[in-house]
Figure 1 (cartoon, rainbow over the protein chains, first blue to last red):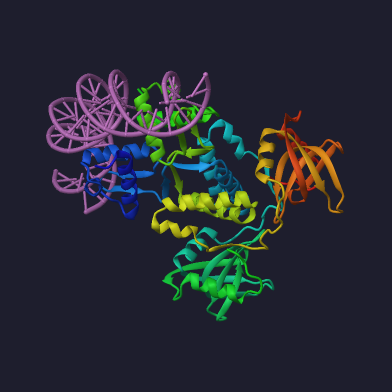
Figure 2 (cartoon, each protein chain N blue to C red):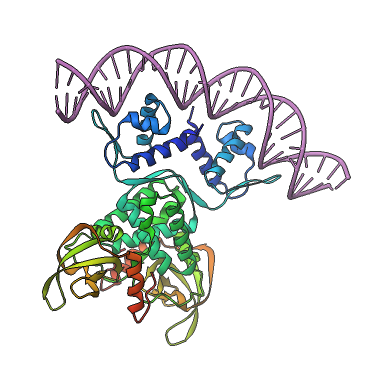
Length: 230
Length: 230
DNA sequence: ACGCTACTGCCATAAACTGTCAGCAGGAAG
DNA sequence: CTTCCTGCTGACAGTTTATGGCAGTAGCGT
């Protein structure tokens, strides 16, 4: 017999496996528990903050996200998480920046008082705050990279020339004030870089590009004069 | 009667309050539970990853750090944490950088497979990798800032002139390749900045400096031409 | 209206937790 | 070495909690 806490994690994982709504009956069978107990388990998870939505006649869906189990961090690891989140909150594109601030707030909320001031503003990130607004959704670009999707760009280069091209994005570079997509350009048959703030419009195709992202990254590195660490 | 899970959190907090070893008997009384049950509770916490050390004849000590309770993060919040940790692993001083990598590994270990590739190297941080080794322990500096401690610096400036001075550090600035301490200098009776890689030697005093860190930061900001966001 | 499903209350039973007692092991101090 | 303090484990009975089955209500889609 598995412990209750483990069963709840199993339930979460099961729920995440499905993309569409799942009925309680199915979940009860998969976790090896009665329907009545399943309802109680769902209630427990919701009480702990899991965003599970249940609708009568439909089933349960887990809002995209993930529940971290209880974890032990050393003081320095925690400091690294906090510092990193603060950097993201300042340097990343607005949407991800907000996510960074939210994550920071969640962590700070559960920190004991004597550690909470770690989150305060005794750290400065210097340089102009990024003000170039991205027209493109950088989060979507990151997802396209993860899924190795073809990206169709409507792009204006530094001379203001506008072009439309299909590219295979394999990495995102974070410079001080801009983010740059590293991609293989179908038009030029070569590697090209695209500043996210110069993207006028873009479409993410449903089809994968025919090569592996990691291979492209490796080849791209070999073409660089000065190797860039990941 | 409190639930078992809450009692375990209480036990952790109690254990963190003490700095020196605590005997099981004391912990049992504070958590309102028998000694036998306390031993079982300790075992439960250790099984969940808490770094509690017990020595016969001594008592229990919790290694410095903190256990985060189960927390729900959205996909983007998780992405922010991962991106931030990767930045820390690359840009911070070696010790904190290692901590960032460790934190990242811990998170990655509990991520479901379809989210784990978020941790991979599709993000580049561009620019030369920091190679100036800090002689000073930047973690210690951060702690000194938090505790508002007087810092005694043995410092070499850009002209190579060596000086020794007492300063009141109130913030740490992360530039691209160097870290800079913002402090009030007792010698000059003014704000001064000190690159951490130019610190030859330093001593952290046990005495607090006579002003509040936040006030110093506020005053310092007002002296700046270009305001720097925190 | 009907079927499907989430959700809640009740209750007997099964499982887990708890406290008491006993004993062993390891470090500290005399 | 002995003694004391403490961590740690096992056994057992009492208590608490979790579980499953049942019945009933309510919301959603057809």
